[in-house]
Image (tube, rainbow, N blue to C red; front, top):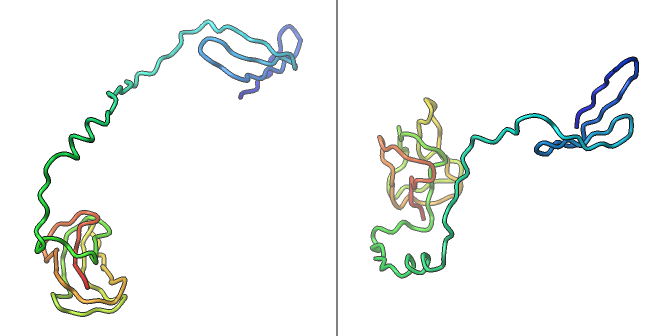
Length: 148
């Protein structure tokens, strides 16, 4: 851990501090191991410890048992979507519904942290729906386009 050199009454001592736990230190002085009790106040952490109650399976059964209404077919996003890679504001949309695009085409310009970012197509396809028109503020992973 730490090494110290001392000279006491003309004698030299090489001290290696191996471990300090609570008020006890494990030392090695000139190759001889010692366990030393420290006369200092033990510092305790001021950070509170968060204690949470245990989660039981009854909680999960209650949530699973709630009645959920399915989303209408017209409001469901298609499985093929283009999502925002970062939060920002949509400044330009370069495609409209029904447009076809090739891999690498710029579909949208997103302003984030005072920089314009081009959102490029990763595959070829057709725009089914534009979910983020100009002026929309989006978060990361918000759906920008539904594609086919």
